[in-house]
Image (cartoon, rainbow, N blue to C red; front, side, top):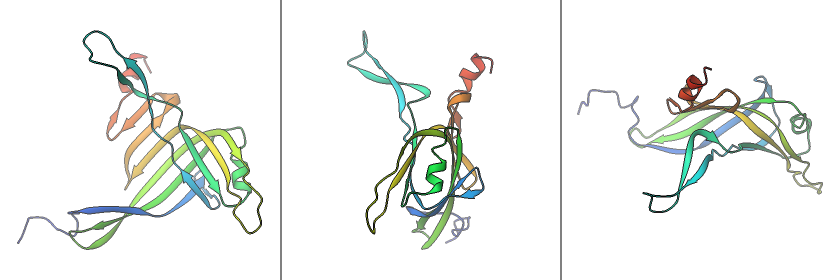
Length: 183
């Protein structure tokens, strides 16, 4: 049966399976040591809306406004990479990964590139523990000022708190605010 398109290029039923691998870079070039990464949570600022005409309370969000966002790195050992990220200055990190998907229509595994750029300033550093034949689990936490997620070369998310940018899936929710402020 000819459907008019190439099934090899068109994913019928992708099962989004896992992050197959990733690397962490600082300032775009230097590969950091082995670390587990906890990505920032996007939690929108809300205010309780209640009153006449509303049958209860509503936590109403403000478009483009998020609460504090943190990026966490957990290091297997106490090391110079984790310590250098505690320096009181901004740090640019780039996480490059490959997501593995299974295409049930073609029976093939597909890799999709995902890149996450973060600019942050140190919020906390936990030196972990010293225990024989064990991980130290040193932790570094950065307050996230800038976050950008690109998937297969397409920008999906860009949040720049200091420049009034809040772009999600093709829409910049702060574009009108920048125009109103003459920025």
